[in-house]
Length: 311
Image (tube, rainbow, N blue to C red; front, side, top):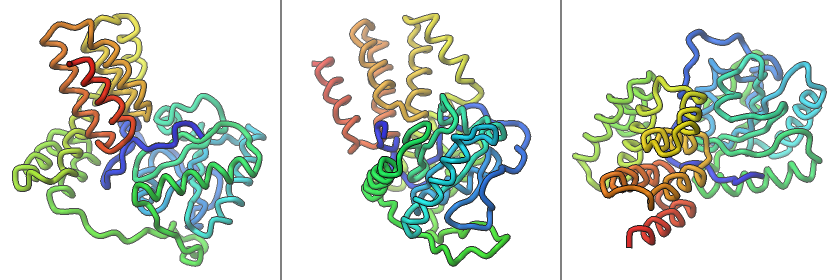
């Protein structure tokens, strides 16, 4: 399991990298498992929003597979069996890669099949290719432990699904009005409205830590809006001393779950900058710390490194 830590445990968060380049038309329905099963079901670019919501109650294992890949079909069967053995503490969402290009890009899949998870709306890399049952079981144990640390401890009742029905939707308490307003704005791609809602929530309650983190997420989404992964990475590679380009790629890295890479990029650049640019990097890091979660050990390490550079 590769760095099994979500980029944040905030309720209402989204998979940021999936929003870097939205598709313009809905994708065709995904193949794979039938959608009437609450434990094992198909997903795709167009329907992944409901999968994200489900991940706030129970960890979702996502397998990116293909009909032309014999390994894929074998792995889907293995994952289905092992997920069902967890008695509803995990669910499996199968996304056919050819029909879900956004998901392939969002999870930065380098091979098919690839298995990732989503916990509280955040991506968790797991593994690629076939793995023995005992290895997958160990990965699932670690995933459930991680989910528990972020308060995702629900269970889905397999009996809730009727043949031909949609997967059971977990019941959650409603978000506070301003948080719901912000989340709805994020869903429709209006990140400025989301930021304004979070700022209002912070003005009403300066101790609203979720609003602080939500504002940081909305700002990150706004900076990435309209930009593509390739354009961001190419600009950073061709201009290693261009601070704006490096800030963009740090945003992209963090949005895709590469938290340490994002922090290291900015902290390595920091000593070479003048005072004004150092201030910009410091402010951006503080904001990214909020996106990840200030209690995250990677944030603790990066904050310590930044303090050493400052003093």
